[in-house]
Length: 117
Image 1: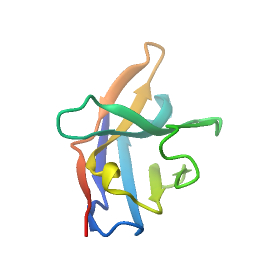
Image 2 (image 1 turned 45 degrees about the vertical axis):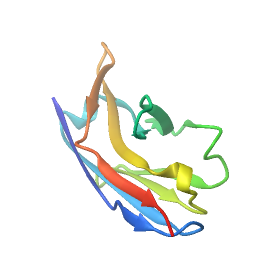
Image 3 (image 1 turned 180 degrees about the vertical axis):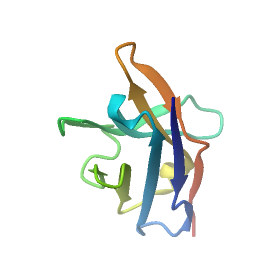
Image 4 (image 1 turned 90 degrees about the vertical axis):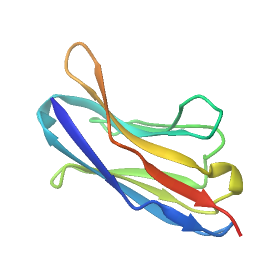
C-alpha cells in the first residue's frame, strides 16, 4: 500500500507559475514510477508528467518546455513545476504511483489548478 498526499494547487493568472508536491508514504521502496495526471471538466484523465526510479521522464506534448517533474528520494516526494500556465491547464491534478511487480496504480486525492485572469 502507498499513500499519496498532494499540495500546491490554486488559482493563478495566465503566464504564471505553480509548484505541486506529492508526498508518498507506505511501501515506498516498491514504487516504480511516480508522476502527475490531470482531469479537466468533461474530459478523461491524462498523463502530464512521470518519472521512473531510474530518472527517465515522460511529458505530455502540451506541457513540454513549460512543466518540469522532479523527485526527492530522501523526502519521498515528487514535484511538478508548472510555468507559463495557460487556461487550458485548468484541471484537477492527481499524483500517481505505480507500485510493485504487478504495477498497481495508486492515486492521491487531487488538487485543483485554475488558470484564469
